[in-house]
Image (tube, rainbow, N blue to C red; front, side, top):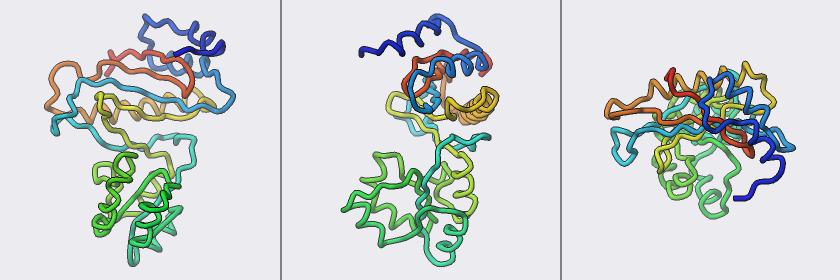
Length: 229
């Protein structure tokens, strides 16, 4: 992949042989941002898990203390009293069966997170083929299948992010925007790492966190020392 001049200049600031302390890595990532828009700061964590085994799967959620810097659209599947509760909590869309054809046939996907009450999972299950591959399927571990829709919506709007292993056993998550102050990015990063360390499956043998890389949407990766984790 050929990178432009700006990227190459930014990449010169990063010593690829060094694993930086988290605070240094955060400062460096802000410096190496080379796009004209407010880039997202992402964390990529390579784990020693083998996601093919259920007992080595990692999936959960954490509320970032300073949010993600992105306005998140929430869709809630609910019925009865829970509909008005979800609306009052600030959900962008609330509905039930009537949303199935809109999503399945019309390809409507104008939302970032889906929450469902447990009694609606039968309905939501019919959308598995659409929502599953996009990582939008509600899940109890991520707190998106719950009767407490107020808490679920509030947490998501406040900056709750979900983390899970991809097929290569890597976790990819956003921790804020380049425009954030260093201290705020650092707090978000620390909150994420604390959650990931706690989520370590007991079945994992050997090194749990193999590498941690911070980067912006378009910028070079900065390796973070795994020593303290």
